[in-house]
Image 1 (cartoon, rainbow, N blue to C red):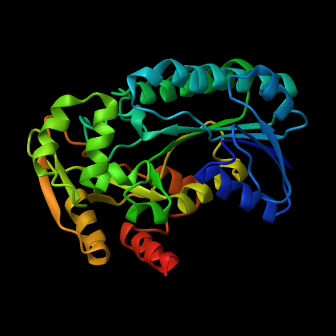
Image 2: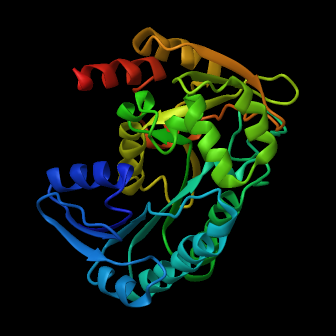
Length: 320
């Protein structure tokens, strides 16, 4: 089988490609960066570049559309809509024109209201009410994928990824996701970039220039709590969705069912970092939710293997 993987140089895309190559599939990566694994055909280009999309789609049997532009900086919103909405539409059009047999779309838990869920755990029937432009772009992508399934009979699968990390990122203050999530200084710098002055002002009094962990609470006093999924579990779910006939037409949450509170996560990290932690009440709603993975477990037949604690232990082992 010949598979096109968008975002093939990314964290999840690289792991998916490694699995596909190991079992003998032909793989094309469409990304702005090259995937250096042996056996990959690289097409360098943006998802909204029609010429690059056309080249990448040649002779393809299935598409794993894993790539996206993710940002919470207001100035990036036009670029994000170009990549995630226009790009997804171009990929669907090319897949239809080339007679691609299956199209798997990586959506996001941000299509739900992660700060104001109507009930928990969030299952696939929960109302989709994104609260970020990124979540909106993924919901628009879902709508387009479902339209192509209805209108043209395309075999499609939608996977809503939970927060996804490489294990090694969890201990790295400079990582894009884990730095601001678990460390005070990176969170201040992130919020300054976002222009969130109220959040910055709440954090600044705790910053004396030394490295500290951050335990975030929302304005109502609730601790931040969320599922954090290892890229290996996400990649395994993507490949299973590619292979499964039962997955066609389904929308599935993909990720761990373990929702870890920020204070519990920081306590696990502190065993290794030995850093102090500060608890700060922020002037925003807490991200506080849990998702159900029941549908994906039943249809795909696989369960997540990596708890947060196991991910941290793995990160320590890799450092050593």
